[in-house]
Length: 342
Image (cartoon, rainbow, N blue to C red; front, side):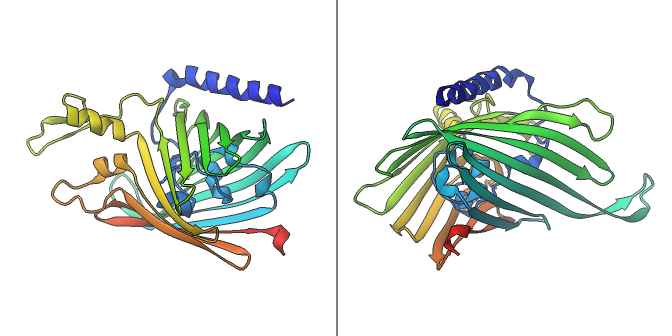
């Protein structure tokens, strides 16, 4: 049974890598690219090899789920920028001999907009939002390896137009018996639209292959995490016109500095100070965010993240913050508890 499950995951990985040439628009169902977990937000926004018990972390790698999550309940809330708000709620349950299941719900509200006709006359207001239901299943392959996948029905509504879609994640997760080293591999967001907004062609989602590791020092209270992402995206170069309206390409690899910049854009780095199991302080950096959203005249702390977490009684609280640009930062709040403790 375990071998069959492993073969299924490997077949899914192979199928997804073969489908990369069919990628569609980059901005379809943007909710899939948001960070819900406060702990993840404090570590650069994404770590697929990091262990934990916050169910919103399963968005990054479904294979993190194991029997230790059973009866966990997690809630996350993010008062984002420009009146955008989003959140997550989830619960997990383990069934002996079958595996562990988790159910999560994600929603983002983009706020209220002014509606006007083609002549500019205001006719009222409208709202926009996106929702995802995440159904996750995992099963241990051995003492150290766990495999998992998530099925995610998607819904997006923009004024009077809506779209349905479906996405699938598949991953593997390794835990060293001493608890110091973990490793994760995941392919996220393989899927497509099922209905378009307005009689247009259906688009495929852009699958993302990611690899991550996390290591805690044996004799010091520090944990280091790193994830390599966008491995199916090819070049992450981009161009914008300069003040003279000339095309300027960033990260084209034409010199050693550009080559280094090009490589680090695939990385997300994080470090935690963990003096006890009930408290941590974290910091991270997202090089791609820093390169693409900084202002050359004042780079500031764009791309850097930080946060902390602690346990009080039966509840784990986490806070994370990430600087996106000079005009704003994100604030992430998460709370987790286990129903078995009541």
